[in-house]
Image (tube, rainbow, N blue to C red; front, side, top):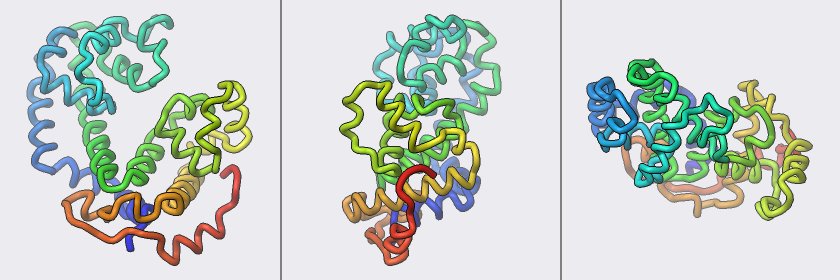
Length: 263
């Protein structure tokens, strides 16, 4: 049986190859080709919002495809940029909006915005990565969360960053065995709780990050078992198909060796 831990490890064993396979998917390749061919024609925020295909591609790259309908909201994010500490994007709790405004920084770069490498290449790389994560999540939410954590955790500057991101928080709650109900208490107390259990600087160390994610996937498996999703094999994530899912003997053995608290 293919576990959450197994699926994650196989997908990330050669992540470059996995991303290449994702990028070569016909639909992904078609959308990327259109984006590359047309993004340079965008010279303003209004141009960007009017080309719905480019707009949706970019928002998906930043994990914001679920709010693509809110164009007035996105326009305000982009119009104010990030240079002013009081800019709209800087006031939002969700860091994805600031990331979007930092990349599509029309407020600072004007017409030259779409000629930057961040817009032309980094956004494409993010689109492929997000596609992989979303496809993985359709099969097994635990794998999506693990992939997301691996990508975002090294960027964390403080424990507060975990609390501000629902996906990171879910991983941390699972791995550290902190009840979800703690989200209802005072934010300063939450910061204190997580700061005692984890040092975000450790996530810059690949080995410590891997150990934390391994703990998460193992405990996620324990919590969810076959309910995580029966079609969770790496092959089904990339090319379709079904595979059995459950807690293997090796997973149960690894649970016994996990230490509670910290990395």
